[in-house]
Length: 285
Image (cartoon, rainbow, N blue to C red; front, top):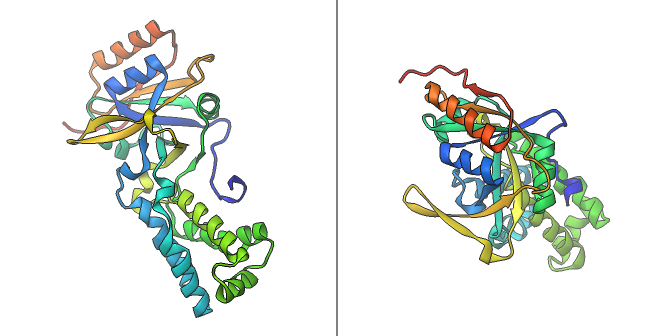
């Protein structure tokens, strides 16, 4: 599956940035443990359904009406939500100083933990297998391209038939082997893309996601957020290696001297020597 999902990965020299509040930042630095949120509890409540909207956009442009109807009826409209029930998301950003994320994750008590990206991913993957990771895709044209290539090129090559022949086989017998294999692979791919497609309005976040599977329900924890319980799992890094910390930034409204002084001292106690900078964004109180 990974070979034909079109997800951009970070390069060797890129950092990943995790925006969070003060106590969460202190906990991550001390324990090396992140919290990955259950996918159905993400901040954008619409994003898990958004992929169906994009898929319909692509299918609606197919000239053959019977093919359009079949793809909508047999695949898009019957995507199995259960396949996403055990997926958890750990979010980072590719932006070092992002006003949108400061506003969302603590502009007054927030910190931004910057990590060497590929080292971080390797360290996490060594401790707990990453299911998928990549940049979130915001542009509708790019999202449609991903699905169009799945429909017409990538998946037909996996099935061993042309797109046209698969459609004809589906019209003749929707439960036949060829179309059934195609349907299963397409629904699985769309469920994964659902985790990486977001509406263009969220593009300012420049998000990078790590996705985890959690079939063992006993490892799910809960924390309070906004008056409700938020399910999450703990994501640990390779304990044999030091956390690949690159830098730390302090939120725009947290520029008192003690905010930086306290973090510098805390890092020294933990054995880290990395820059602690103030956000360059100037906000009025």
